[in-house]
Image 1 (tube, rainbow, N blue to C red):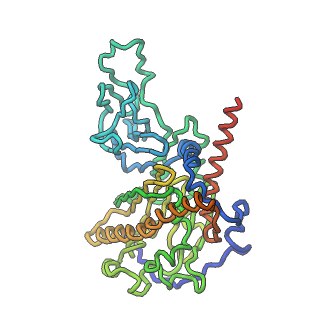
Image 2 (cartoon, rainbow, N blue to C red; image 1 turned 45 degrees about the vertical axis):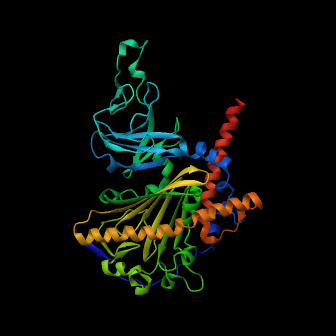
Image 3 (cartoon, helix red, strand yellow; image 1 turned 30 degrees about the horizontal axis):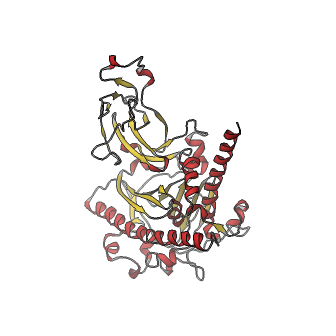
Length: 435
């Protein structure tokens, strides 16, 4: 397998769209002060549970987690008050079911701790309580002392299915009784134009999770704009990659339905002065943006780098509501934000590389993952301060609105998408009440 060496590139100042600012391309978003009441209101969070997390397609994993017949994993979706099982059946299909026995409602699949996620391989699922057994297709196969029940119809008592579809190896579920769109319709062309990207080759994973004391949207906001970079990440992103007199600017923003993306470009990290890198980065030739050399990927899909930025750096695709896929040179990074309350959430991060072929490549991947943790911790370190300040401003001073600049257009779009989904739910609820 050949390698691509990322040659130094001359920094370039990216022109704004010919008609002016980015925000002017999306007049429906407006330019007024922006409310963050949606991040401090317990009442609004309860609406998000119903309007978004019980209606939208949610990414819960990848097909590599269920590689063969009987492979399964569980996922705890606290925000939707649900636990699900994802399993590969005997026909090779990936299915999802509510993690509950149909006898008396015991949690079906768990090990030592009922609230902990688990995974494994099995021929069937057996309830720990009374021994009912279910096939990989969810069908009820065995009832202990079946003759003692009254008119029991096993065909009607299989596991309760959850809508499950796969795109590009990413497993999505939808908890709605009747999803309004297929997964592909929901994702739309900006995301599905990534079809053909070799996600399936990048199976060496470094996974992290953290419980954060902030609203889920606030951490997502941090990765939708790079206006914060010169202040918060001054070492990682020094003056060499900033536009003179303006700081750090992104090369391209784009929205499609509730989804968003942002591209960066400019000077490569390895062209910077040594004082702006950790010593381990210089030694291993790997770090914040991953290995400086990466395996050849072949022809890339048209959806990558949609702004045709040259030199291109990173594409961050933000799939509504709570997943981000950041595509670098030869590897990708996955973020998920799972709400646990109106002012807390669980963050999941995963770095995905093509499997290392040498010890050096393995070290490069491990260095990248460690430096990533440092970078993410800098963002996470702001979260509790932001959350507590927003709550204080809201409850003691009545402040909910704050200015948002042109580079923060995706923050504005994200919160509007959330509000739009909540408004649709309220409208549907009012129609139901009227009937």
